Image (cartoon, rainbow, N blue to C red; front, side, top):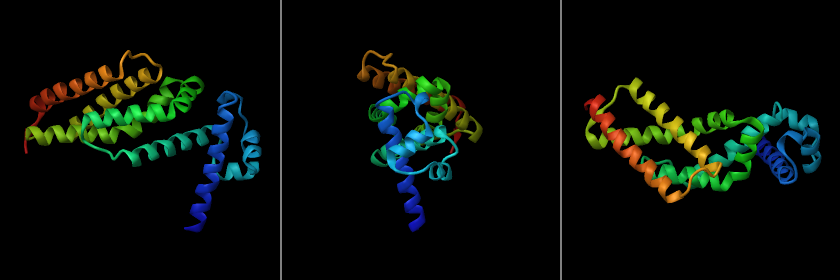
Length: 192
């Protein structure tokens, strides 16, 4: 337990160092040497915990997302899921912009996909329950993938400031989830 706590503290120190450096220069220009010198560790410590700078970046984003998840319980309410996504963007705009700039849209989309699939699945299951029909597992997973892909794409549009109004965005997303999910569950669902 003590070793695990020490390991977490070391990783967090490396993350904090990377975040400080990101305020001064782009991700592609940051070196492992700069990261460890900035926080007082050595390269061996860095490579004990991370394979490379990209794995540090990924761990940093995962930890940041976990902190947002902890403060916004996962829910089956589409509006809360969407607000959760917007909150995550606001809290991590600089880091997410860095990921897009340095790693591209696809890498950010892949990262976000894994983290938003669970709440989207819960929204689908809630719709099934409310309608009184159940979907086949394979179709539920298809819908989870479909809606999660759409949501992560829209999150990137929000991040790039390609939406005019946050309120309109939320209303449009909620309407899309509600109307389409209801129709799809009615069309493909079976009695519970």
